Length: 218
Image (cartoon, rainbow, N blue to C red; front, side, top):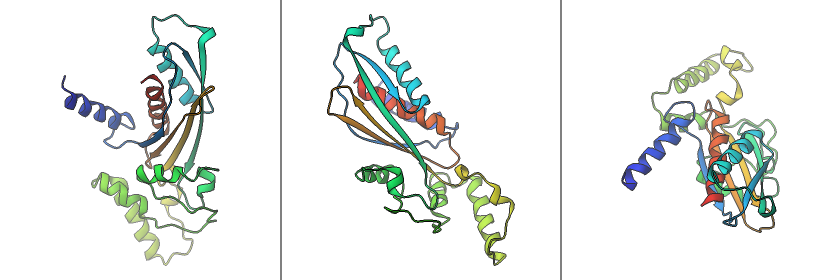
């Protein structure tokens, strides 16, 4: 199979992995991980989904090779997630590491304010503009527009409609932030994934784990 065809199939596999649609989490990374070629890598992670996928991939990579407890290294991964809803700040998403903002931008999300913005509203069409660009025929976009028109027509101060019961994860994108490092090494891998509203958060975490595993194994 030619490289171009293989690349196209890989892109398609990632695209359909989440929710069975053509949209997927946008993942960006920086840094590197260099594991000793003959070492057994064991992952410890703050997120159980990421940890399970990481250890499965690492075990599969050394299939048929004897485990060597005397020559093992620990892969430590911290995972945080934050919904891009009104009130969120960069301090909440990236505590102590504002450099992650560039990865967030590369993944296609607009960074929130540095400090707490309280309940200050954001442009309600910001996420929907992105959704419509990715999938112009998405019925969720039309529903959201109908909802906003309804609120405005009511002159609306606080008027409730059935749309007010929509779960926040169906309206706002979620950002997953992962930092991975190997025992006794100074290198660090940083991963930012933007999970679009309505997409499968668990599948996005699995993709993040696979990216980290690939960084360790290659």
